[in-house]
Image (cartoon, rainbow, N blue to C red; front, side):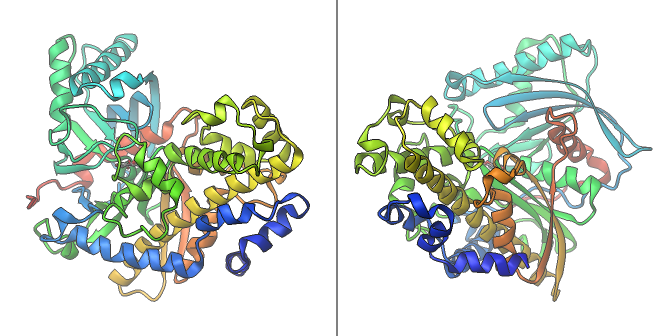
Length: 492
Ligand code: BGC
């Protein structure tokens, strides 16, 4: 039923969908601005076919170095089996904050307990400063936390969720390929991140840590969900950035020796399109977002999907519409004029209802009429739907690949998911109608694009509401001996 319903909404042109949605208040010209963001089912199938080729390029020994989708081996060869236990520290770096946690894994009850945690902000100057400053800041936060927990005398093993593309040479040796999202610290690309962290801790000299295991957030998510559901073989993040990992057949992982079994591959799908392969669907607004970003030309796909960029795309569309006298009687406010002032979280708040929209427009200093509120909602919905559908095309590519890899007629699989864009869209209320949320839009589109895959979405657990997700993720992942074999040499 879901599939049929979504097929209808895919086949309706936006004008008709919006006619159903906001009939009485939509100026016709609005459609012209939003058309480039509409992707037909055929186009999404085409996007998926292009990504399918790029996955193969990324895995190949000779094609890898030029491939935009890096397909990085993680050396994780199986999901947790629930027999792991002990006390650990976990660090989580990837968004605007940095998190330190102390966790305990109990074998008997197969539970991961968060003993305590602390969040440290990372000021923009540090995100754009030197690597030494960044790692000194991390080591200082960790030191403060250990002091407060009276753990300074112990040397606990540490799991490090580092959410950037890294060439993993072993579980404790990980070379940063490039910074993404809001980070651009000098002197880190091409270096071993674990070594930089250890050096910063030794510079302080007031505490020490045990063995370190590095993991990407997608892998952490897959592992933590795998702890609860053995079918979980994909981890996906739609937050500040976007990415996914999945279990690939070893015989296809050409850069790693060995033919048997499977290995988790960090796809780094954010880089899809960096070679121009998505130029036909990239809009003038995407081009602008990329141009003004700190890393132009890098992570084009991510810039069309993830939380770091969606708000800015919406703002640019609204600015253009205002300049062309289609919104706010042509009057711009300071907030609308200023880059990055329209935060991504406003998109789901606006989609939540007209009353919300009106409040937000007032807060942004805009002089609105009811019709403006309708148009702004439609813009937000269009850009968030495009993000969900592109993400669906990528996810369907992975599930279809797993299915054909295993020569199955039908695949039943679970996707572990995390990230603010996805999580926020789970709080749906009736006031949101007739717009649907990111998660629903994603599910509908995947269902059409991977009709022979039965996919369950499992959100990474966050029981305490304070990032327990990352605890389990990192923790499960660095309980190495039981399920990770880090013994394969990699041919770079
Ligand atoms: C990074 C990935 C990460 C993703 C989600 C991207 O920018 O390259 O490594 O998994 O963001 O955090």
